[in-house]
Image 1 (cartoon, helix red, strand yellow):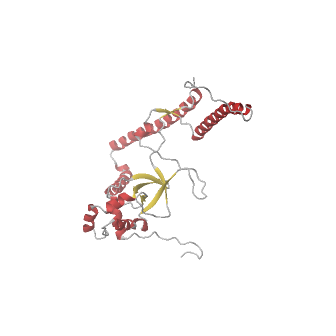
Image 2 (cartoon, rainbow, N blue to C red):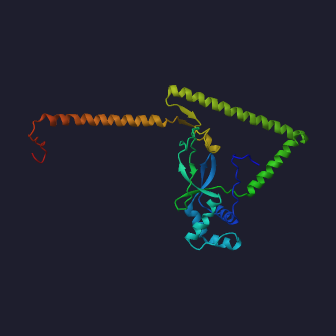
Image 3 (cartoon, rainbow, N blue to C red):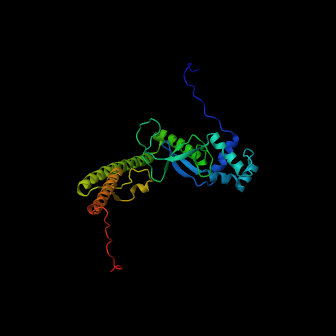
Length: 284
């Protein structure tokens, strides 16, 4: 038992069978989901209108006949009510896009690095259900791939434990394979040091500097890490802002210089006199 005055940890609510059935059905449908970043983790993002449209489809009607836990849907309002089972059971929550550098509350941690092509989102307090809003999944069903991966991990652990019982040829092959892996790791570190030396050298010789394999440490696929072969170092946003501000100041000073002679000419004319307009071609 906890001491008086201390907060008691509450267990997460258990989802109802109806909500689990709806979540399982929507998970099996093509909602044109996209990947987002929520609190440093990758989640699936989808739009409300696609989920509501799936609940009004013939596929859902056929699924209701096979699964008694799926609620009946006859119109758009009932589809929205069925969809509301997801946030009420914490199976999917409404999120909104934010900038990775923004900090909420009084947290002063390091800014989150932005991942190319992925939204950084946060959970909204008001769980509205309009067609244009976005929700992210917190329901992760168990798939056959996860089962196979779990069995594979157990088999690999058993093979490692039984390594002394392996035939000599297999143990020799594992030794050669380990040497190849160590060589690849050493090659990777050597390439990282060489690209840093190349960047420092090109900063002095050819500013702003050249990066070899610029996407090597980015959050991309394995093959995309080696594309392109080289690229110029990107100038920071602050330098770009300074350049834009200085160009605007130059334009403003030029416009004031052009306006000064005209103002001087108008002030030089005596009061009450009308300055005649310049003759044009039509006036002769």
